[in-house]
Image (cartoon, rainbow, N blue to C red; front, side, top):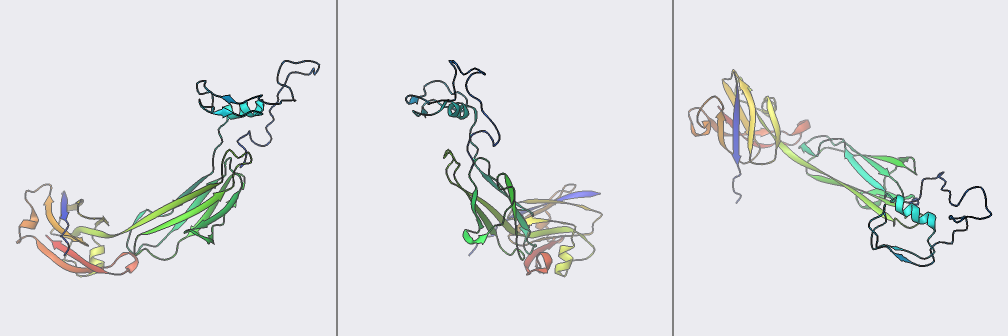
Length: 283
């Protein structure tokens, strides 16, 4: 029969490009085939004769309060109304989780940079040092990717930054753009619990218990146990306040005849990394 054991622990007080249409797009202005007379917008577009202070409701991407400057061509006005320039973007993705066990092997980060309507990529580097060059590959006018391989194992929390600088767009509607990506990794010890045939005597015994998870502080932890004679619970810090079984009444911690602990036992991190003293309770 499976039972849920609930552990409640408590802390112990310490002593580009232009915004215009894409390359290759042609915008025709003016009338039809006859050039003898036309009341439309001809090829000799001299633009606005004076500034226009927009007070109409929002029209496309033209907002009330904007100023359409004297000399601005009609083609430019239509483009401004129908197309909003899109700035460059940078996205970083970590190959591992952002919360890991102490001693876990580091992975890699994949960066995706998209130029959109900015100018060309000027610089790309990591950890705020320009000498740490990020090598991007792909379409310089579109999407490019770069990979940063991380070295070693996690023994503490770490943060990784990447910086990519794009030039201003040709028409100046998008200024020079500095993009940053920051990825943080939090490192934790694990808690361990489960059914065993004898009281754990070593780190390997503890790590072999059937249930575990990252320990980030006091809380309630649940795991299943069936057909058990001995249950062991190990945590890296704090103190267990309650151990209870769903099918039973009472708190085992309060019954010293049934529950023994805390017992100190040394437990390693992942990949046989540095051990610390855990607290173990045995029912």
